[in-house]
Length: 565
Image 1 (cartoon, rainbow, N blue to C red):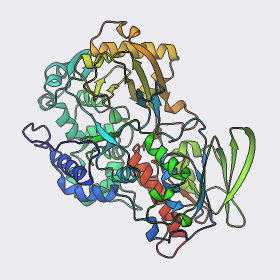
Image 2 (image 1 turned 120 degrees about the horizontal axis):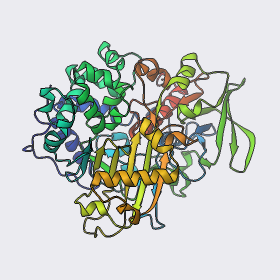
Image 3 (image 1 turned 30 degrees about the horizontal axis):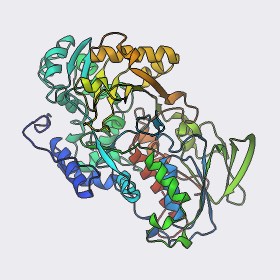
């Protein structure tokens, strides 16, 4: 199946304004599905990505005044849980191990005091259809600007062959395809369509109701979903009868799958089935402004502007505690729960008891907690076995924007060199001179490349990245030595507060663990949130949605209006 709309240049698309309205976003979302030949999925995707029911439809504002909630983890999942539970009057303490910054894996790094030049080490783009993210963006009044996902002037550099990334894929077909051992029909198919054939087309053979299970967490899945779930990315490519040459090519042009060829196919296609990459945005000034808005709402002397329909007297209090690292979770004889923790001032163990806990840290971190008594057998199995992928980003601050001198104003370049992808900041005003400073991600890679490049010494790594960037761009060797003025690397696997960049299931883990991971423990006293708990791993949408769902499940457990998860 090849979608005839995919590469049709005669189909005009909608404009992409700054600060889009909900209607403008819906038009862009529908158009993207039209170009991908499955508009019949629009309602399914919209429903799956929309925020869950309002928590105030489950319990009354202020109903649980005096009740105490402990939240482990101050990332987006923990922050959204706290924001919602506060509406019901709960008093909340957020225990966040990081004392330097807020936001968890949302990590905006600023190179200057004016915060003009920055890079995103965590999420850097927001699809227009991620409704839960947009719910909070609109609520907090954050400014958004378009993210440029593709630029025809960026480079594709494979097998030591450099071409520009033209939208029809003609340059790759003409100059790079001959360097790969591919079947005849593959050599006549643009790489974008070849990727569509191997990634999206397989699921489109199933009815919309069935394929929507890709972006849902359910207690049981259809036989078709279970088949997809049993395959790795490479196995799906092979099932589609793609040659090894084509698989090699696609692994470089779709690196989130190509760097995880032996991971779960469903966990890969979840990014493409809902057409995430067609229209995207960024938060002006940095993604950190989203977690900062949550934090500001907790500290505000006028919280009414954040909770307009709830009297301030009905709101609970939120205490955000940075530098407080949780070490254990315990179930007490009086049916309460406790945590043990240390703080940034002392290594001595302290304890705090709560009516309920929301655990919003990655399972890679939870694995090292003391848990007494143990959670259910399947939950403990998931905590031990669920796979986390690594990602490495190195941002380079340049004293001039050399990429703009080559006509590049955004998007990414792709290569089979260790840097894997190079991303160009698209938040600079185009009227500025390219001879002014700028920041790019000189390297954004995953899995083994992230481990290998990330574990080099700092000096070796930046030299290697500069040489790779020069090679991709066709620049003289050593040219960037006088241009790169500063740099910063984030290797998520080696960060002790995360121990991995994101959840990325291996085959059959969706069937085995996705539903049990959401279930509460300790007789409904401990709930779970995070991108790993959600149906959409690796995205802010998954973290925020799971945080809201955990808050709702907690409220449900205290009322008779609904059942627990």
